Length: 72
Image (cartoon, rainbow, N blue to C red; front, side):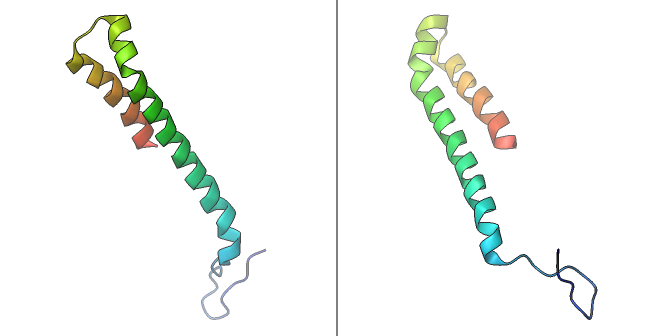
């Protein structure tokens, strides 16, 4: 149940302690995205050797992986 402001009839703000689990979940999700991007960046030399492409094309792999993650 949400309490309403008596004068305006709008829901009252959520207490700060109820927002903490949401903040922790969002921070954990962001940390996982950062770890994924770091893993891809560490693997770039192996990707370059396996595919036999120049360095400029390998940078596109990093951008192609990071850009959709940033859009979320």
